[in-house]
Length: 275
Image (spheres, rainbow, N blue to C red):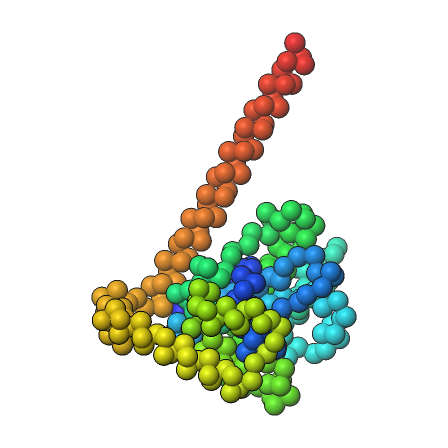
């Protein structure tokens, strides 16, 4: 699997709801919670695996029913704990659902993914918890990579497979996702419907026909893109990571600037009171 150098620190992400609804139309196991009990959007951890031009992310769950708490560790999930100390032992707070990990075509990620900074959350208590969970996950990220690949390569038990998404089907869907495509829009609007195998094949065939028609109209080759403009997945990922780092750095600079301005204003007021 891992043709990208993904063995770096894990990060937190949010997904475009349209994309999740689109994937859900192919597989009901795609994690998309609804209801008034959900006060925050689902957070995903990544990048946990890669396959050619596809990268994978796994959803986090608070596990309100404590379903996973007393289960032994398995290939399909990873328990979320707070880092422990002598004074404060680790606490179980949720689970990372590796069986529900989803793919993203790396060339389409910018309209689908949003990097999340735990410390910028409006709910500070939630942000602090998110940061602690991320700290725990990075401590054991090699185990997560291994479990993720076990799920994707089917080196798991039959019972475990039953709880996993159809990763091959979702990869096909990820590679053709385009929210401006009318066929894709129909899928999104049909949520929460899950389409049949026959309907899925008809969808892919229609998308392929449209793609070929566009290529013929533009006079392009098999890919419709000049060879010298095609980048490897590693190059695309490196460019994306640099943009993410730059955005985070700009956020830090803006925060520091605002802090300095507020501190300066406060100091002036204090001096006026002293006078």
